[in-house]
Image (cartoon, rainbow, N blue to C red; front, side):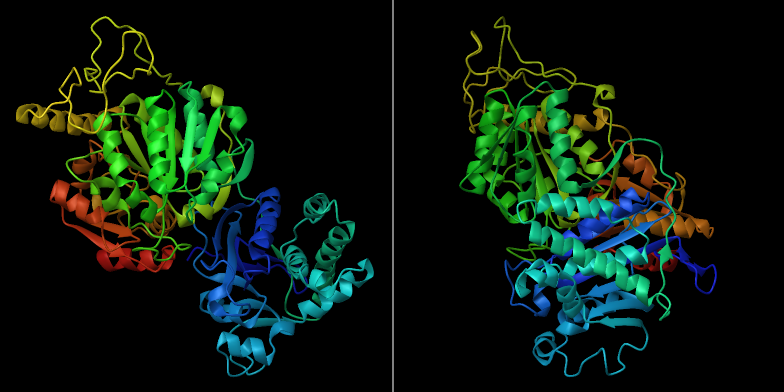
Length: 621
């Protein structure tokens, strides 16, 4: 559904494809993520639009050759706008039997398998659960098969450089990459320069990797006239002029948080504890100290959020991050942030649950936790980003809202968004609207819990400012003065004020727009988070065929956009695809009493366009 037609220009010429989907798969030690990353960069330099999906096991080092140790990297690239990672594979590079076993079901009929037959020995076949060698028993008749002893050819290519057999075999991924470079007409120069720089202190290793890359490419040139496998030309995509780079969701969140702090004229203090898949955000931000970013790795999740909250109390913008299990541990401190009404940004990279669940797989099951998951009436703002590049803008928005409304803000990403990548047009920060922080400085009539008449935010006073000394903590406060109060009427008033403050955020952000389609009609597909790409592609295809369907995608989860009820009321049916058991759909039903219907997938994998296409057609039939 999100693949491409292939045309043949002549018997021996290149094939031409609008788009292609390639997956590299092997053992977690075979370097599949690195291989996919280099092919991604080469593809971006070739002018294609693209989307990637790194998929790796949760085990630190699963037994070699087993199915639960398979690591894969998928890329969908083309000469048109690419919105998903692709439903079905055009090419599967399988470095061992386990990789073939795990990934074969995703290969389209007639697709190409490139298999390293040097690893298909009896031991590895048994580990993967094969009774017979699938490369030899005819079970792959529905596919094209290029069975080649990559291991042997790689060792032959690198033997002149004096590396050990173990070191030589580690370059096998470069051999496979060279072959795919030949197949899709990619330049090798950038990768060669990168290898020489990466292994500058080991010239023999650098030379071996370059030799393996070139050998794989040369093998492709050799077989072109000997088989039906020929190069495929994917034309450049029509992309707006500008400066681009490939960006992962983690990188875009880090840079968005940093840009938000700069636009607020603030120092950012990022406090975190490692947890998959959120750990990379700490690694990225740790390299940005020259942008007034301080990072702190705490001893646990509770310490991390408390330290971030303390940084906000002291006059910086405190930020913390985690995944669902870690956010659960932060819950009490989030309540403290709501009670003290301090700005705080919490990035939740959602993963499969419950408990430890599926640490390296994606899910959208923390919406309820984010909107309602605290003791007492404790509302805060919840935002969700829809794509790796959108993470930048949404992170800036999270910082802006947290400061303007003096509230914690939860920014929802997920395991897919954190690791996936796509081209991103680098914005001009000088054209972004600043929102400088306004600290309280005048002691005349100062009360720590007085309110801005528009936002209901309380003043932000740095500790030590003369005349602005005040008490703060988790116990209920007297409206205005902030003194400890157990008065029933005051508690009712403060609870309602905190709730109203959050609701006023809806008046400070744009009204909800229709991403694709019309503002009324037979069917609206409403999504949030990383379902954006598959929904957008499915609705685009359906509308091209004349079906009356529209796509609405939410960034602001709580409070919901102020016009959303009226907008949704204009459709006869509402379909809400989610990678959970139906959380947004329940929220929409509860708030608006609309007959929204859910479409749920909880497999740890993103939606496929075909799944959404079938659901759309079923409701419009």
